[in-house]
Length: 484
RNA sequence: GGGAGUGUAGCUCAGCUGGUAGAGCAACGCCCUUUUAAGGCGUAGGUCUUGGGUUCGAGUCCCAACACUCUCACCA
Image (tube, rainbow, N blue to C red; front, side, top):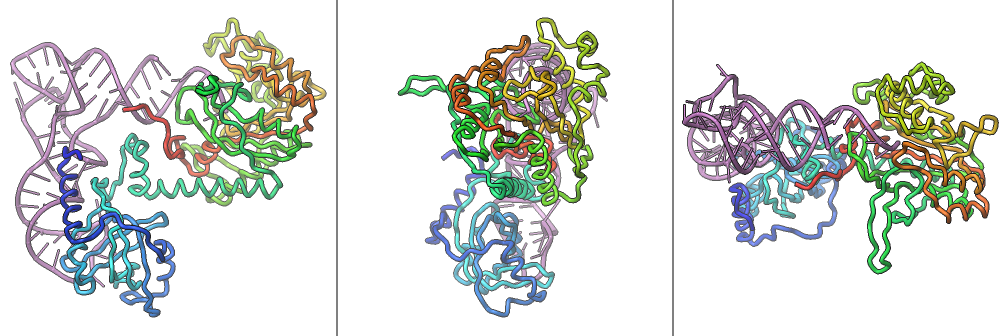
């Protein structure tokens, strides 16, 4: 054991003293534990300074986050996943366990059993008749008032962050609840949840650089998936009319406030639907979540006020381009001129790529309230069905909220001949392409895939919006950091 | 990868135009049976991220490295 830290040494000495008392410092199974929040609500009727009149013994367990030793009486604040509850330990009552009580310190995990009561100031308190050591803490916890503020340590040692900063615990509980609600929402609409390969021989379904890994006994390189799309659509071919998957995607790109190399994506597919139905579904689902998890339909996100009132804006890509860049999408000269003014490199770039870069540079920063950007240039959408009357546009939308792309959806292309052609088409000036040939996927389409709508929602970003988190790292338990 | 900022005690932070390290919490000792960030008295705690350089002298100025934050680029 390293003895570099004096505080740690002192705690090791306490550990030894606990053992000398004949107490196991690392405890064991414990039955009958009630959560702090349960105990709090149980105590609502107890008068100040009184005890529960049923005389029953209750048990709480958790980490000591505050400790006030006032001589022959010790008050401890125990924290568990649900909240906190106070333990009162009196020398008179606890008897022969008093020496153990005096050894307790911040960070230790203990349980206490006794009668539930309230102090004369009203604090819900278990008056301990017995305490049990469950885990001796050998490291000094962070400062009790400010908590742990260093974001580097918070992310690297989330196991401390979660109990040192209760709002962090609340956020991740909320994340769990939201995802459970999304599953419930989709199952109510008869979607099946499935899991498709994370390791793929062709990394398709999105435009992104993949991570590469290797399977030893097959001696085969594999890609971590950048999207589940092509597998989920194979399931449409297989007859699963409504499927969804909530799982990780991996993209080998830069990190930012909105990007983590592994992130959680919801993708769903609904046979016989189209992108209009996907818009309704996305709007309905997100509005339900806003209603449940936010106060009112206007929420603050990154110092912006975002208004979720329905109906959300639905604007054509070309119209938004015109509105914010002043360029007509069909006037490629004007587009290239504007792109030049803004100052990005565009030689050897396909027209569609320049248009899209101009769109990203001028339009996206204006999309604060939920906005469906619809009808993308078909060239940018190799997996999407084109509009019947305007074949140069695709039935695709992206949903923007708070200047951030949150969802992407389309009417799925189900013509194998067109799909095969799109896979072969490469746009000049694009580093990555969504059009990586996947012969087996084309083969699947040849069997016939029903017309369908598909929708992808970035779950981490959705959680950011619903919790007001400024960084994706605040909603991912263990975000990727460089090794120290 | 580019630019800007940050890195001081276990934690949260001060530290001026260079003069040799501070507070609060936590810890340790003593007192205290209704505290709420308990209180009182006392004690101890530092390779100032790392490595160079300038200087009589560097936490402070310069260079480099490492990590984090913001930002731009790539992307969802």
